[in-house]
Image (tube, rainbow, N blue to C red; front, side, top):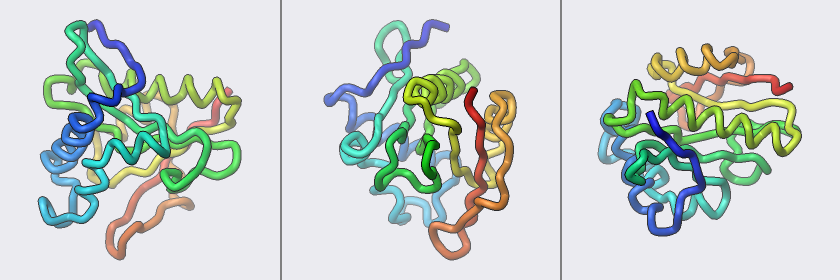
Length: 166
């Protein structure tokens, strides 16, 4: 499949926010469904782009199939990254892009950017139910770091994963 990974363009950010929100809703990842306060955060890709690099995967026709926020320099979008670590968040792939390598291409681009910045590790948080994502992370060499698991809200446990970068 012909996929290009690049920074999201200004005119794509609204669509990226909707893509991300829809992916989380459709996968049942929001505690309160359409009433979940995190839904507004997922939809706000413009704000995300002010504090992180919003990357998109586009097909040969330029259609956005997936997106991710790469956090390489700390700041408010770095939930668990410490010194020398990058983090990625809000990885989302449209149904048409699933099983086609879109998610993997986005994660690989985040890893390349982290290496380019000279960082020592990539970290991420994930809900325990995100089994397909966990398989992808395992294939790419990430390992679980249960000592870093955390709850952004009471009762919402997030698992953490890390990959040491060469």
